[in-house]
Image (cartoon, rainbow, N blue to C red; front, side, top):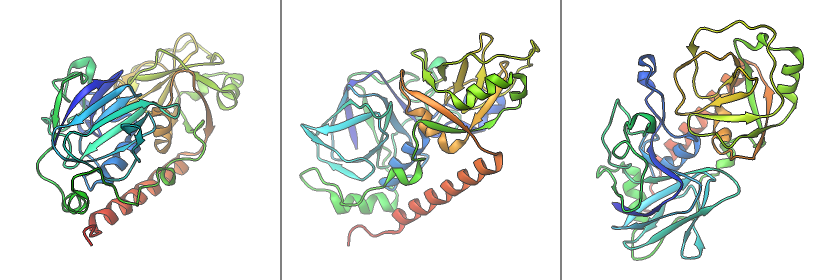
Length: 332
């Protein structure tokens, strides 16, 4: 299966779930910003959740199918169309050779993910196909995608992907009546993010902590895959103690020297010297990944045990969903 990009959009890269095994060597995780949407797109066509996808930032992109393809897309960063007909998300889509798909900007998010049966066929670099642009590492020649890039899928399909393909393939666009309901896996409130207090939260004044947990913060234009810069009430420190570089990861909220906050994301460094006011619960990181400049966000404190419970609960639900799609005979 193969496509050609006709228009690459603002930023399009190959991503999977990242380089988890190399954090100790200071290699950033990278991978999909919205791991939930990426995993669901892969699950929808019977792929492994770790297969490589294309991450599109916003719309203004398009591609043409050089061969018949079986795809699925997830995420709210764009509306997907064939001619003027909107394509449904999170369900298998069979597209005949010559089909042209257009992505248009959406007000509902920032990123969407294109999965293809078998995953995109690109070399593994440090056990991942993810693109880390600052180091020109991984993905498609270590860079973002551009017009006329040709991308092919791996030839080996799972049994589920083969069954889904067999049930849909033909001479026209086809998709089943069923779809994955993304809202079942995400928090209903998309403007409030649950956090756990950070190791240095006591370094900040009581008023600052009250503001942190009660005021809205705006996504700054400087935000990118490394971190989301937040504009809002200044967070004031009680003392000028400096922090030795210490571990950080996606979801860590740091407070800079001028009292502003950075919410670290997929391409963040592995250590940092700014004090950590909070850590976003992993189940709510997908909400952060879909935030656009100008959007507002609020923070709600929960306990570490509650964050862990929510995470394991969602992982169990995703495992059940993947198992169901792997075992259903779609040809009947």
